[in-house]
Figure 1: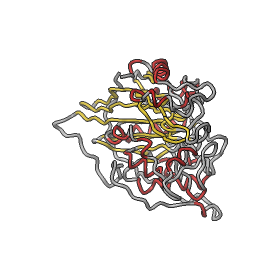
Figure 2: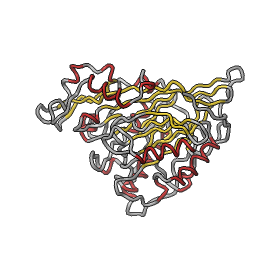
Figure 3: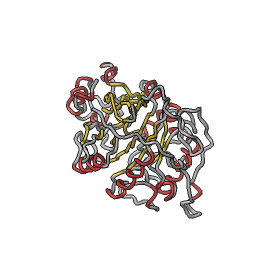
Figure 4: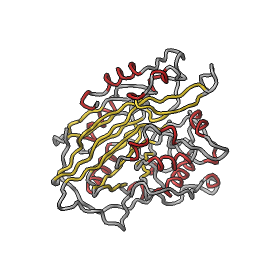
Length: 405
């Protein structure tokens, strides 16, 4: 399936991720900065650098894309990743996916649990706070686009919002962290990544924030048809492709709800290129939605959990989507779309204690050994069944065959 649009070559807006001060003096004591550094992973376009032109002798440009869903760091996960009193290393958990992440031109993930400030202490459900080492780990793994807009963005209030921006700022030349903003100017700036001479605008919206209200309306974007129309229109003027992160749907549901279908149609009518959905903690369908001008928009309703520690087997099945952005003879398209399922594995740290967990790994479903499945912590707990056959049946039921390898 191909989605074509004329190639747009325009100048970029600034990618500044910091802005005016958000807090009163009493709030600032928990605001943190980061001086961590990392090796170069990916270049984010700045106004000072002109984009590389498409070589005249090769009018075909391809950018590979890889996306994971919700990176939801429950307490058992950060306890497992802890090295000493102050340091955490999450990278080994992703080692079976790391090669593909690193070798993709643009790798995308939703950081579901906020990195809200180490001085708050770390927490899991219901109000999350993830160790700041997670930011550096995601950069080291090779992620290029990290989304911070979801229902847990305000779990640590406005101080947590500023802290997470401070943690990501040192990596701003290599990774686009977006969906959370420090000022109205930042919110109104279209965030753009450039790769192989192509420009990608990234927008992010959430259905809500668990009843918490931001101190400033610009701190994150909620679903709103007028706001979305305004943002997408401006993004299309500045980029070749528009990517939308959509935090939506019903938790634990394998089917989209009506709100998802309605906004999917709006995104298609606006000629968005691709929507990467998250929030349900389950996989949901992928489809091409036809817009009012006859264009087709790729809608990925939900990729499920990238990583989580849950009590239900349905939340262990997640997946990644891969495809290519293609520019050829001044036409744009998305090609080679495929979904690859994975299973989140962990075992009991203390036999008989279902909440004590260890040995976290993310296994591609095709490589998940049955002997590993038999050792999963959820085996025998309530009505959970952990098996490759069961999960493959669910994948075949939810994901259309055209997107399965």
